[in-house]
Amino acid sequence: MKLRSDNLRKTYGFDEISLSPSSIKTVDPNLCNVSSTLASYKLKTPLMASAMDGVVSPKSAIELGKQGVLAVLNLHGLWTKYEDAESRLKEIAEAKDNEFVSLMQKLYTAPIKENLIGQRISEIKQGNVPVAVSSIPQDALKFESLIYLAGADFLFVQSTVTSLEHIGSGESLDIAKLCNKSKMPIIIGNCVTYNVALELMKTGVSAILVGIGPGAACTSRGVLGIGVPMATTIMDCVDARDQYFHETGKRIAIIADGGIINSGDVCKSIACGADFAMLGSLFAKAQGAPGSGYHWGMATPSPVLPRGTRVKVGTIGTYEQLIHGPAALDNGFHNIIGALKTSMGTLGAKDILEMQKTEVIIAQSILTEGKVYQSAQKLGMGSRS
Image 1 (tube, rainbow, N blue to C red):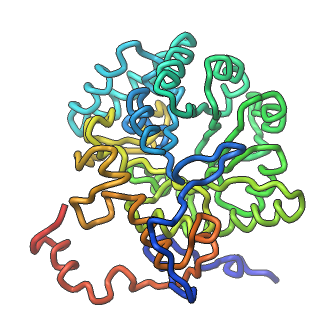
Image 2: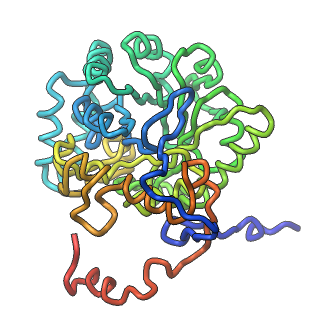
């Protein structure tokens, strides 16, 4: 008889792995190419900004885009519900800790104004940067034509867990139908397993978002008990990507979505095989971020079961400083691209594809070995920001 315990397996997060410089060569970091491909688009960096209201606004999408980051605007957020979204964001930032969930539940129940969808896309388009927007599955087909005609380049379709079959009273999204209809690349998420990733690829999507519940402001793992540590789930879905490429010759991008705290996690996510790393809380720390130093998850305003919280992340620098430096902090929050290039050069990887072949090792003491003084600081004996 097969036991349930036979199905248990060890999985790993970013803190439990490290990258091994096993190559016989090194590369000058200045020669490392960090561009990555999404559908037929070559993007300047492998970084994306999460579709969260405290992270991406039309203005911040332009600023991030100028730094080579693809920012995704949430079409079910405040920007398509209110003309004066900035004042609503200010309310959330100023709310007391015991008031913010009920306030957001109130603000987010407002209906989407379809004219604002086109307006917000147009605002980003005027910045001469790629435009990406996110919709929930229920509205993806409904809004697809409007989104395309407004000038969007990418449509992200996101839910906590994406499936191909849904049993329920409402009509579920036919992903293949959406992909066949749309002239835009469709990016679908989120998933965490080989089988689901492989089946999603067969529908015609251009990329898959990988990760459930690891975000700084997400509480799905605590509330629902669902999730797989990021290093393992990226590798599982990358294996599906490689299998699909072997069968069809088509390469589907993998986007590591969530759990990325600093530049080291960006390096690890790409070494695990991801083509892009999607960041939320780190970009929420930027000067001019719409959350004004606060960050919250997409499911926080749920009227039925909130699965997110508002976290105070503060402000640590400009978008340019976070992405390209110069670094004034030593914790991996500044100069993400500089750190990535240095990591790639040290590991002998001249581009993202070579970085994805880096040896990844299990190293559960990687963050503590020899770090007695740093550990003491974190315990309050001289803490760092």
